[in-house]
Length: 300
Length: 291
Image (cartoon, rainbow over all chains, first blue to last red):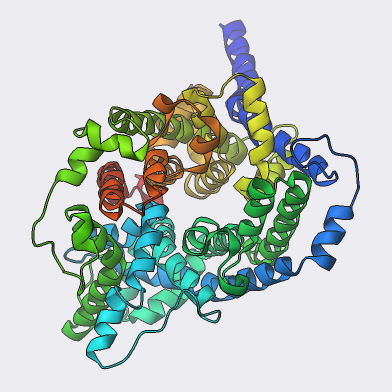
């Protein structure tokens, strides 16, 4: 008996150590193949001037120098992305937090509200983009119709360089707020209801609850949402591509970093240069996310 | 779910805010719905009508393969339409199911075990989240070609199934929601490691799994770039690809068809969302573990 017990203990002890390796192996194999390896290969490509058909030669950091010092469209795109970042991250994160708190309460039509917030995420961007263009069209659009009733005339949002990025902003907010709300909702579910209920009994108002209970307890999720927003903002492609095409609109006012990447890779076939753009975008995202990581460290 | 008694004024304000938000968000979708039942000419009428005078379901019938003669003008044969919906469904559903299990078991390992290289690997996964998909696209294509996976379902399923974000999300979620004591006591009770995963972890993280499932489903369902590059044979096309072909019709956007197509796209997702909502409602909180 004693032998068996000892054996059992040993066997279980081994399983304890071996299990994690087994658990992660399928995921990791796929990860290495389709995520990690392509990164390194892409970085290698960025150091060449490969243009798809003829073999490229190694040109080291020339692509990067060309990009940062001589490509005006890079800085236009960068400026546009940063603008979107500054506006969207706080708006999206705290807007969706409040919405999630509201939607976590017992309300009539709750499922309807949740579904309607989430629907834009789900709609194919090709069609959504066409619809937005249609809605803001100065002749046929719904907005023009409504404004017309007040005696005003609609200007062309799409061709005005100052409104290009706000238009993208509008589409992004429309499309992704529901998504963020769902993430925050999942996090809110984990807050024990007793805490909230007892705070109500003690007379806390809505805003007090939000400020002193929900935000501290949701801090990891909030930081996470901000990081995801950051990554998403600098990766934005569909929205601007459908609205403004690969040119980025009039004087490239609607150009985003990812559009630049797409243009160089799939239109000009400058695959080496495009890989350099990809790498620079990655670094920008990395720096942007690092800012938030500082707050993620102090978890409760 | 929080049961709260409100002063009436607060309650009204909340409803107004939510209704206003809903209307804003639903407006473009409503337009799509309306357009899907209209004919192409009626869409360009001025002033635009709020609901089609002569509603028609012909757009839907076209997309489901009913009008083979008309379709040839778009350069594609109509029996491919239902086939493409089927392809999209297969790819997306398989990727989602495999994905949630893969990500949760990997996240579980990172959250609750110690093993060599854990921190480095996790950092690598974290780093991967930040890479734009377009960046790894070209090398991935070369890899797929070498593995002879072009034009198979696997080419569309595999690339994002062990999604770094999914692994990260699961790891955070599991680390937050499951105290080590639960796992320890399960081990003492003689539970083997895999059973810990299936019988303890999985039930507790159900809301998180639901959110992950929705995320993975969405990633695949509307994806245009991946199928565009990795499939060349018509019968392997997915639905977004077919919509894109219609959109590029040289004589102008067939808006009515496109809108009907996007409504069709929404249906499976709505179903999933309603099903996953029930998971959210089940809301297993931290408190449940103590019972």
